[in-house]
Amino acid sequence: MHVAHLLQDASLGLRPLWSEEALLRREISGVTVTDLEDPARFVRPGEIVLSGLVWWSADGGPGRAERFVRGLREAGAVALLAGEETHGSVPGDLVEACARHAMPVAGVPADVMFRAITDTVYLRQWGDLSRHHAGHDALPEHVRLLLNGLVAREAGPAEILAAAFPPDPPAAHLLTSAGRTVAATPGAGPAPVRVPAAGSDGGVTVAVDTDADVTPYERWWLHLPDAGAAPARLLHEITAVLGRCQEALVRRRRAVRRAADGLGAALTGDDAGEVAAAARACGLPAEGPYRVVAADAGARRGDLALGALAEAVGRTGPACAAVGRLPGSTAFAVLPEEAAAGLAPVWPPVCAAEPGTLVHAGLSAPTAGVAGLPGALAEARYALAAARTTAPAAPALADATGLTSLDALLTGVPAEVRAAFSRSTLGPLLDPADASAAALLNTLEVFLAHDGSWARTAEALHLHVNTVHYRIRRIEHFTGRDLARLSDRLDLWAALLCRTEPDGGRPVPAPRRARPTTSSAR
Image (cartoon, rainbow, N blue to C red; front, side, top):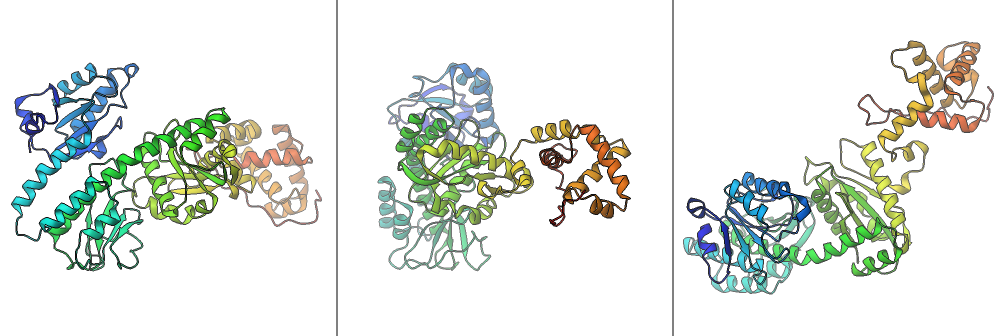
């Protein structure tokens, strides 16, 4: 199917806005529906891109449209179909950007559903595929009609999978990349712990291609433990149907995600009434107990953090939950306390589904009900900062209830604040070019680690006690602190914990504490 065939389909009523004859002869390989401002990594070569233009705004300037279209061109898209419902028409700067990047563009009237376009492309390709492979282990006609009917009425994946293998279905599991079982044929038995590679267990694993905007964590795979249970062509057609099923699920999920995003906006505001109303819109009862999770995958990667968090929450199976975005790129979730307890064990396998991405998360302490969610979110964000600090090179989830020591608590303080506190408190003791300063800093570490004992400090440093006394007086002179006072000792201990490595990020390992003693002799 060529781009021209789609634009000339009178039943769709598409309005061509810019194109060139040669570009209209390009073959369409599929359809991607997206409202991401930067959708490039979800678009495959040869695809038509459908966008409702929710990402566009008049105050965004022409640069926003330029980046969007440039991303489509670099991803290999063959045309852009822009919905007119959101803004009343297709913005002129978007059409101009398409002309600059040789990207055919057409408007989709407000009364034309995107599903009608995707179905047109699918049915054309499906018919071509069926004729080409007639008599080569494809689905029987009556099964194909049954599956198409199930997809049309938006049946779930379990129902589609059960109907795809009549009359005696083999063991088959529909899994996410992170290993969650989405559906299985009756009597399939337990699913594999992880999505197996094709043939790794003697079985076969086939990717489910979909035009929906799904992250790598949520991608579906069809796995059959017995590689000979179904011919490859049959599996290809079944996964195509499952791909359409996932698209329908994603479309239905959008309203749920919008409600969750509204809750995220309310949690960062200061109106308790808005929080209660937004929680009701998400289907959350007023009484908990609840816990809040905040997750982050770095700047401009909020979609990946949201996907990982949604997949992790899905694996815990909560009775009710809200998963969405906070203003910015941070993802969040509100879920019952009993479900939140299962997040820690599932977090590593979920994150392993996309090894090149570091997703960190923080989990709040329990809160009794909806009224406590803003405070719980603050706890979760603090624990998220602690996770990034303590595990900068690996995915991690930190629990706010585990921040039970001073050094653990300080990991949630921003690195810049920790460094500033350390510099202002320790002053010249941090001078790397001063050997005497280094000796004083080491003495301070050992003195505090030995609970302020002159004798044990001297023994540990192989110094005379008088030398320790002299060095402590010098430390007190440079820092303005009195090491006979507990509060000043705590300040200096915290300053030592807040020191960072030369790159300014990771904290220096904490001084090792000596075993406590009953003596506080100096």
